[in-house]
Image (cartoon, rainbow, N blue to C red; front, side, top):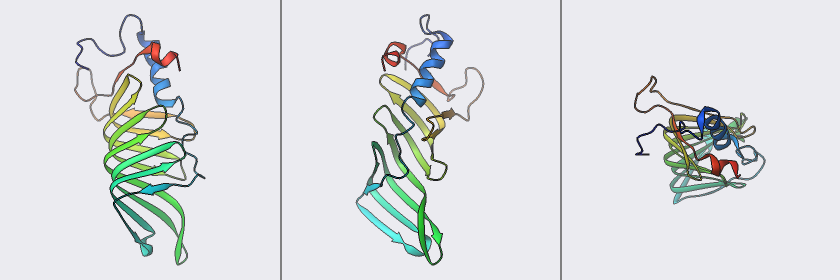
Length: 178
C-alpha cells in the first residue's frame, strides 16, 4: 500500500476494470456461504447463558462455524427471540474485538460485527479490511447480504485526498481467473 500511484487507476486496469474487480471481491461467492438453516457450532474459553434475556455470551478466543463460514472474535453474544416464557429462534449474533469473518474466498477483519438472522445481513464496523487473494479493500463499515452476495463499503471520510476514505487495490488478472 506504500506505492505512490493511486489504487485502481493503472493503465491496464482503468475504471471499468476496477468496478469489475470490486464486484468480484465483494460479491463473488458471498451468497450461499451462510445457510440460515445450518447449525452454528461455537467454541470459546467460557460461556454464560441468561435465560430471562434469551442471551448466550461466549468469551475468549471465540470461533463460530456455520457451513463453510467462520466468525472469530474475542466475544460473541447470541440473542434469541422471546417466545412466551421461553426463547425461540435466534435473532442476531454480535461479535466484538478482533473480529474475522472468513469464507473460502475472502477474509474480512473488523472491530465489531452484527449478523441478523432474519435479514441475512452481516454488518462489520471499525477498521474494516477485506482481503481476497492479493486484492484489498478498506473502509469504516461494510454490509453484506449473505443471501444475494450484495455488499457495500462506506467510510466517514469523504472528499478528494482525505485520509481514511474507502480504498481498494485490485489485481485484475487474479480476479479474472476465478
